[in-house]
Amino acid sequence: MKLTEEVAKLVSEILAKKEGVGGIANVVWVAAGGSNGGNYPAQYFMEHESTQVVSHAYTSNEFVRATPRFVGENTLAVVVSMRGTAETVEAARVAKSLGAATVAVYVDESGLTDVCDYAIKYDSLAVDASDMGRTNSAVVLALAMELVHQTEGYAQHDKAMAAFDLVEPIYRKAFDYCQPLASAWAAQNADRPTVNVMGSGPAFGAAYVFSICNIQEMLQIDSVTTNCCEFFHGPFEILDKRTSVFLLMGVGRSRANDERAIEFLQRYGGERVYVLDGKELGLNDIDDAVSEYFNHLIFSPILNNVYMRALSAVTHKDYKTRRYMWKVRY
Image 1: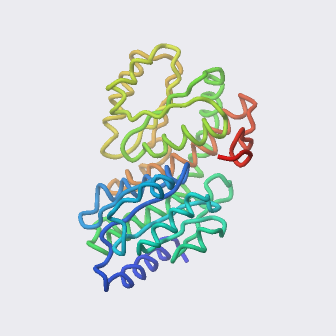
Image 2: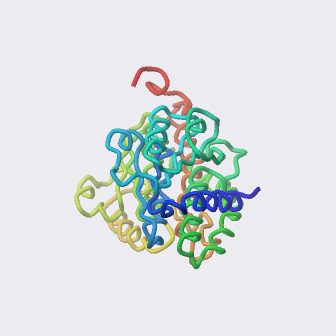
Image 3: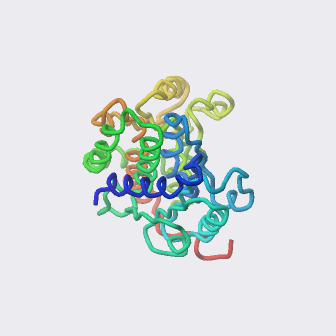
């Protein structure tokens, strides 16, 4: 079954089950680390398109320790973890105990799939053979779009659903296109102690994941994520000719914010200012009415599978090794 069909069926089942208690009034997207960043497209879409269902995104342990009071029988909790991170499983347990409908988005069955009412499997973007139209971010975005469509109607629903079929072929072309670009960028930045990552609007989640997961976690290199709009309210003071900046230039309404930041970076920065343009990656192949919501689905796997690997090669850091993760108590 196609992802879009599976999601439509799942959302329909949940709404039917909750009809007797007033339906779904709010949705929470809960996860930790890269999975938390991967929920950004769903949250961004809901913020900009939903008028009836209120949406919130939380990192797992904050949800557990400071559970929002509104969570209850009119809540849909979408909880994401590749293998069942302990705090994420606990977050699902808390949501379920309060009466929320719980959906596990997962790769391997775990305590998360045991706890949740429903489950939908995704393909890891880090695996070369995966379908990039079925990653965790694709699943949650499809859930968000279908939830809005079935509760209030989404005028661009058909275009959005068709776009999921384009993600994989767009990614494959972009993967080949970026290889020499990534190699050149990595060689130029191998000696930099900090990589500043920038993005805005629908691309900000991909910037965040690139920074905390790909650069900090996998390569143990310092990294900072800055919103292109917020850049002008403090962070631009660190800029000089030596500063390493990697900016995601998205497609959609926030592109003008990226362009503003780029103009300043090119005026005062140096040769280590790098721009990755979503239009060059093929996001223009998706209908303009919905393309901005698919920024993350293309940027994130390209950053993980091309740019992170290129930086790993030139710095001679094995991106599969960790200092602390899975090795010590935390």
